[in-house]
Length: 328
View 1 (tube, one colour):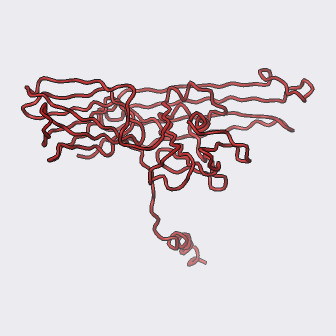
View 2 (cartoon, helix red, strand yellow):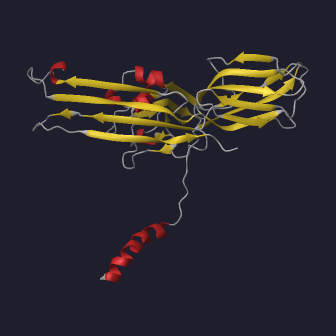
View 3 (cartoon, one colour):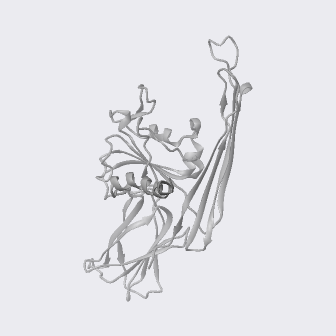
């Protein structure tokens, strides 16, 4: 019996060993900025230093233009806003400010440097309407302020999928949405690049607190190869992160029986219904310009009585992994 007790933990490892190593496949939750640097005559400028500064976190990334004057930042954290600075000895500094990046963006920021002292700066403010010329995907980006402002039944941001072109509400048993004529189980749902599809129903298995969502990205056509799982829409939710400033929010959504109208066939009676959804978010720095935190609290007491009244409580804690600055 003693031998059996000692070997029991080893027995638990057998299924894991039989499964073998698995490859974790994640989707792109970053943005890309690239461009070409030339002088006033159009000649290529190699060796220029390009700096991308996330003004909300203070995290910087640097690149140097190659022999063709080309540079690329392949993995920048979404959000921002960013300031892109380009410097080269003998030329004035070129700077682009207020550049906001959405998930999977591929922005081109090219510069034409003018001859002059490096202390002189040519500053260009990024346009609020940014045309992307390097991506063929048809995307709809919904930012955090729009998510909390638009009406959401049950506070499920996935319902905003129907705001994208080509998306209609389906009449099948799944009660979700059809994109460009595809079946409703063909939609894909991601949270911070992780697949959260419910296996049996192929619906969103995780629905984050809308106050914690920084961006909702809906891709409906010409999907990139990384989204090879589904033929419908890709609904990607990006959670907020901490910054150098403390920030947060609080909410309370209340509904009760006396606020509801009776059903047409209920004979004027109102079915008992009680709902209290409350919670909040909090984010900020742990180490300025290096380490940040973001917490989500979502607690609710939804109750709809059909037979015997009984209160039910749902509580969930969600903690987002810290954001750290890239290694040098």
